Image (cartoon, rainbow, N blue to C red):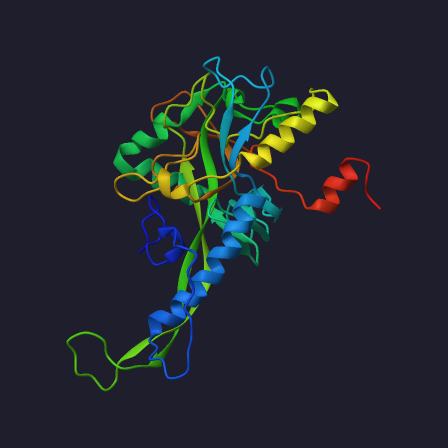
Length: 328
């Protein structure tokens, strides 16, 4: 069982492999490792390209264009990844033929390592069951910490500007999707290790998969920390020359050394706003506000609001061209 706090160890891309591929020659002795290394090479090259294309790296901004929070300006690290298409999260109230649920639409995302995460069918999470499970875990302590007053402080700008009113108090939870590898099919194989078996089998296929997580946000949200993903800087207020300079510098200075960011345990640092208990490569999808009363433990009052607008959106080039008035 994969731990939700760390990326699955069976994906070699998390080890940030070098760009080395096998070299074949007639008569060379080859093993399973050589063929696996070839697959890793091609996956890693594509993932690196996607990671850069979706924002991994640094953004060097001109003086006065962005306040980093401490009065300093300069390189702003971005962690990349986000939604490419679909994956809208919706709340579906209970009906005569179904339970209350959160439903995630089919879609495609890319994580900070550049791995594609594809959801081919709608997927649901039973919200009432989830709430009851969290209430029973550790006496409901995590649920109490995630029940916050004035939850509009932690909503996206689009949701705050809309007509839908947020409750006075709500449990706040975030929906994430992450990449996992699923082992499929078994094929006869020689036993590995100190075994003498004639019926040994090995995994024949590895399928790119996914996991959904709904994570309570009782990790210190306050007026100075909304827990949402780091947003790309807004350069629209700059004059054309300053905007050109900022974009050129963004490209020339955007070269993240992921290997240099690994900690002593070989783990990637968590992006700003990322829950401490979740795999740092998981992709944020939506924030869920579950209205509760002032009781202890909190009891639901019925309203559920889903905020899809705090995520990183990665529109395709045709959509960007249309937004800029350059569409054909």
